[in-house]
Image (cartoon, rainbow, N blue to C red; front, side, top):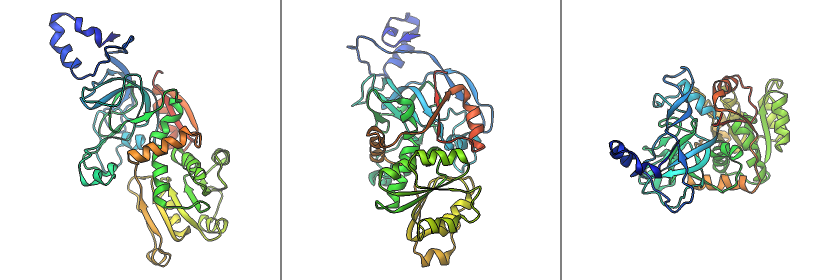
Length: 382
């Protein structure tokens, strides 16, 4: 281990190299204890899509002038991480790649231009790591649509490592003392479903159907929807999923493995169809069904991104019922703050299973088989 403060006293032969590293960091020289940052760290990295997920030592990154260096304690595992590894989306990832974008940890260093953060602050690494803040989309608060967006665990190395960097403007602010394992899934899954529910423009007492209700996103969508006063129908499969749905406060569960006519059942239990549908399922069949059981003048929100799939809606039904089909990606900084506030006020509690970072291949295997209820979170220390 080495301290950056003591690196001033390295031998003359190493002076220039050390100085170049030091100039990239803002020091808190008055601190009585300066955080020790290792040269190497544990991470899970892959060299090619569908290749080996290597749990190995890699170098600790240096923060740029506008970035934080965060000692990641926990990271949620999202279905998007699986897509990044498989490489089955249209957009390209960097290779080799450290995945992950739900990282929660502690600020241990920062670039010289960072303001408003201090060493020891809790911080979160999100899907949207940085954006230009000056294009049309950023000016309209559509930051996730920025053409210069840099994505954690996709276009840059993410949170499946013990130390990761994040733009200080986009990094999520987490109050001291927060349960970092529990809050980590909120940094993507929570923000994403909260934004989707906002986009649906529903009123308290409206019916919302959550398709794919008890996975990582759906399990939090249930809680946000309940906190917003909505009536919730969940569609998923299996006893464990139904049990979790009821525990989280859902009203009506429809098991797609048993129900012979999902469309008719939803219309029946909601007395006319859903006012809003949150599609976090990756099933093309489920997405098409949602266009049929949506109530007249209702809104269907597409969140899950099954590779190569289409959203098929019968034009006659679509026009006559005046339904809306809207895509919803991740949220902006305001959505982040609001989504985290629901958690901090105790209105949502992510259902998590904590495993070691070294067990990421096992998590991906279970994820592909649909065997995870709630969210898996990796502890980077093991």
